[in-house]
Amino acid sequence: MIYIVHGENLSKSRALILNQQKKLMVRYKQEFSIEDTTPTDLTNKIRSIDIFGEPQFFVVNISGAGRANLEEYINVITQTPPLTTLVILSEKKLTASNIFIKNAAALKAQILENESVVEGTSFDFVDAVMRKDRVNSYKLMHRELDKDKDPFELFALLMYGLRSLAQVKFESPSASGMNPYVRSKQKNLTGKYSGEGVKELFKAFYEMDLKAKVGEINPEVMLTLAVEKVLNSN
Image (spheres, rainbow, N blue to C red):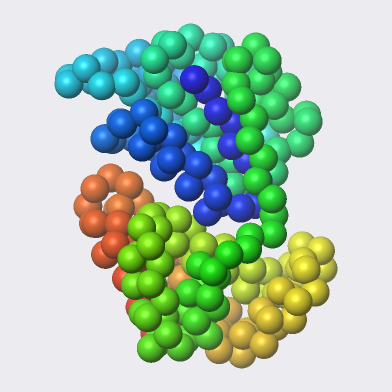
């Protein structure tokens, strides 16, 4: 099955992917960025056979593809074996002109768009971390983990909070389109962060995310490190 998952709500995307993985009882998934993967690499991956005979589960992140010519990738993806799950993930909303959306029918792909406004009690945790409230940050983190929230989902929510802060901090044009309440809340936080500090957080989050995905660190350790990075940032 092929899914095209896109939209600003990355946490919801991650939750959907995790739920599908659990539903299929697949122990491991492989995730990679399309800009780091050639069509030949992708062909070899989706045609590979698991040594334990389990169905393969792949996530292809196309967020950094930009305006690259992706026609060859479409041809490869149409050859995805029936028992293989392939998720095409975009961290932003895809337009109707996007090559994957245009070819969804040919790919026999299910399109899932996530809303840009993310709600839920997990944002109590994000708010506490972004306020640099150490006590409540850990209290709410453990509350969410005790509810079996996926560490990757909570990490994605932190990234969402950091991205929202950066939009306001650096006066991005996209900030004007934010919910007024969210924009006002972020404005009140900007004094706690320097411009360089925000940039360093993005770099640190990227490195932690990469290490977790390749198995160098445990996802819960990644989440704890992310919380500490924010709490101790300048």
